[in-house]
Length: 177
Image 1 (cartoon, helix red, strand yellow):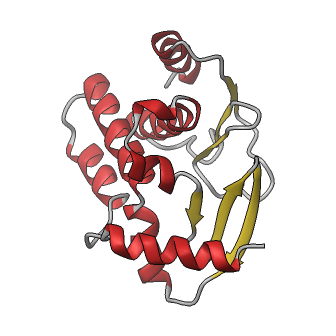
Image 2: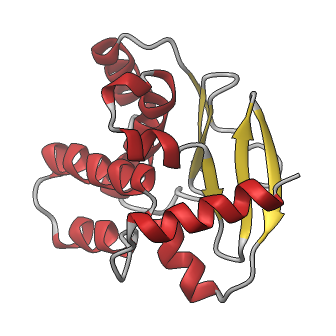
């Protein structure tokens, strides 16, 4: 049985972060494996959804969200493209959000789910979190084929250019209310 708390506490100690771990998902995130709330400094893990999954998968999602915590709370450690992308959330259905003064402004962009799934997966902060989660889980569980496949699943199917993100972010800036 995967001990979320042990790995969570170890990460917080390593990174000198004061975070909270919750297994209660916020409204709207019931189907997500996890999320990070920068306002409350809370990492939420959907342990109920992950209940029957292997420990390496539980570790992957925990480390993914912990990396997001580091991205938001210690942004000076990351490059400008990642910091900028972390202000935006682009969902599979074209729902988009921009974080402004601690609040999310939203809009809806036109396009198909496959297009937006790739855009979501290619965001610099998501790529970074997925690579970090993979490496941390690999250090614990070894180089498992199923772990590699999980990592690949969350990576973009096609490269997404910085220029495309610039145009999408501009659209979000224009339309978000």
